[in-house]
Length: 290
Image (tube, rainbow, N blue to C red; front, side, top):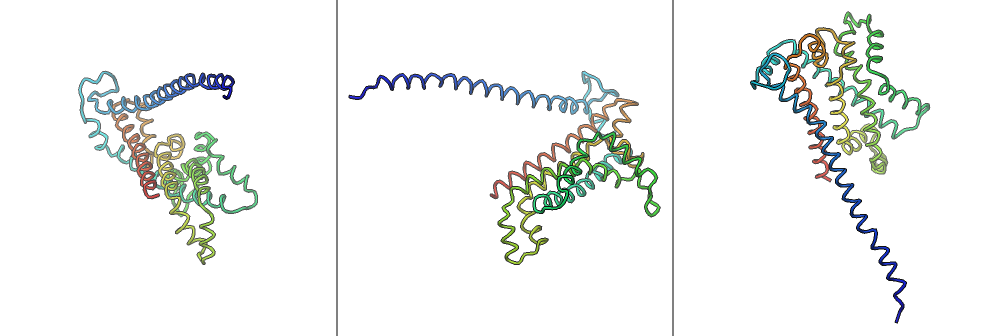
């Protein structure tokens, strides 16, 4: 009969850490849940307070809300100044999205696919605007284009200049996201397309882009949100005719803090939530396809 005296202590020793491991797992789960609840509350509470304040019938932002009303929504959409600011924000955000998405996707593909001289330096130059304060960028662009005109058209104060300025921040974000996305592309498929006679341009549009559509949609929506909510550079580069909604909110806050500001905040927040929802819906659809 085999001697089991040496086996039993080993089994007992291995059984000791099990309850401790379970306790550690429970503690970790509780801490994770508590941290998640804290983050959600930290984000949700200001948004909910702003949403509630937008229905305040009073003429100033204050609690408690005594009378609930849609008065300030009607005031917002009935004001040409605020509607024009919202329109400018949307147009500038769409233009920034187009510029930054096209340039960011092409730059990311070039970095992933090709080798060229001074590649690290070019990478640094692309990412550099992310680390420069918006005040510096806005002031620099304003001084560089303050007296520039093209075909009798003043560049300073135009929406096009704000689009280009916002792209300084949006394009690097698109570049980072798409560079990581292009790394997931199976380059054997690209090479197979070349071997079958596919031209590089056709291969890029018909093979590569469809395989990274989720990354493109996500990066484009991120660029849209960044431009829509950007304030500092727009403050330096817009005029009364082209000022964006965040700029008008800042100017109005200095004179009178009415619930109209809460309405504008709700509109901007809604745009962010819609963009994130579109990203999630697109991502889920792509997962179902695969």
